[in-house]
Image (tube, rainbow, N blue to C red; front, side, top):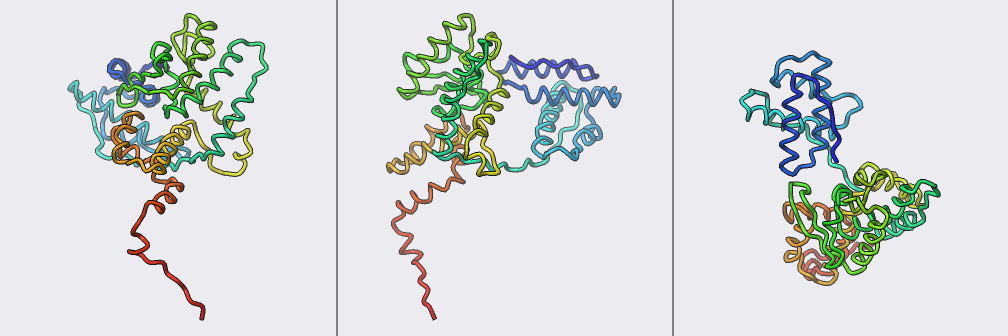
Length: 326
């Protein structure tokens, strides 16, 4: 289910047409739709009448506000650039910037085993104590949803938009449809996760027989919103003692990150050839290629212990330096 925005500027019909075409091609396109709504409002407020994005209009819209981060600025300009490209394909000459402001690299919080354990302990304690049936239902959903994200390395939106028909609990396969980059892929479940999903699926169908979603939201005809999952993750993490010991906070994506690094560490410790396995892992995660998967790994400290264990020649090439006291 997509958020529907009402566009009213001179670009309104073209923006609506552009978003519709992108979604018909399999893209979620919710974030660009929001930023084009903001651009549409900007054009209304500034009485823009010409149906063309001039360099002047782009630069005025591109100006960063005092409270805006580079990441946010980059997101909204990416959205406008894509729309400009679309306008040019229709013969409407519009400015296309060659370089966009570079977003800052956000160093993620790397969840260790103790973090994961503490998070799930808080999750399993969750009881809304509510007379509203949907709240009690979703309390159970969260316990399964976060385990599926962590144990399968899913993206937040992939888990939220899972349909019941795409979760095969007999053969233990989840099919991801039209994910990032408009890719489809199959996720094989471990036996314990398959059993968990099978029990949960039977329970869910008995409660919400008409819902098509594996994780329905407050209203069963809609899937659980990504923002709700983000909010609940923060709630459970903030309830842990470990959350009080660090300034940097993990996010839902940290569970996916933890899955990747854990999987790679286990392979390295068992002397499994990463060069052989990385293409499979990359495809499993829905990445463009192994290089994108290695990005998850470049900050993990645990790897250095494994590398030192495997390194047979470093002590000969770079001998240990011994210091003598005067």
